[in-house]
Image (cartoon, rainbow, N blue to C red; front, side, top):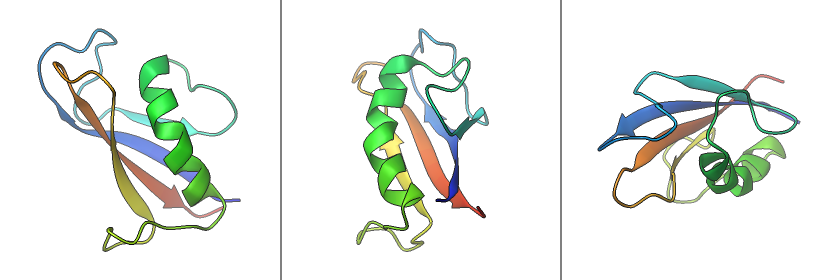
Length: 85
């Protein structure tokens, strides 16, 4: 299994969880401290793909993908990247 980091790469509007560009969260067991649970639930399926060696065909780098939180009025976009195990 790989280690994963979710980094905020874009934030528009007012994030209720106060996430801002540059924030990073280690994705391991459970919801990381201070990460919005709605964002975590959006990230989780993609995290599982990367964690177990998969990749996304639309991404140039097989170790990354981008995931947006589900708030369409105040979107926060995370770069999810696989790091060394």
